[in-house]
Image 1: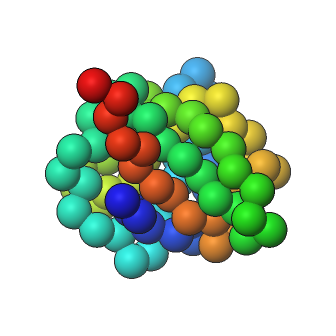
Image 2 (image 1 turned 45 degrees about the vertical axis):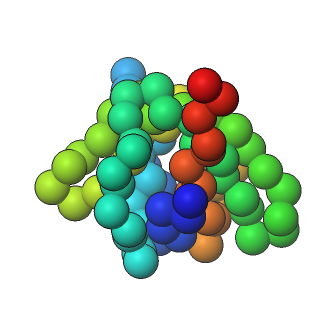
Length: 83
């Protein structure tokens, strides 16, 4: 499920990469350590996981990603559970 497109990304020291976006959908189903797939504008993909959620505005903090790897316009997708 497409969650949003990245409008800006900020490194939060000691936490991870905060992804702020536009066109955010309901974050129902998103939880700590949910799998996230980032689809970059060039169509390459990066898989990571949620390490924090700002419920007031829907921003996500993800691990294993660098600001330079996640340009504006990157799509943030919730990965299907492998249960």
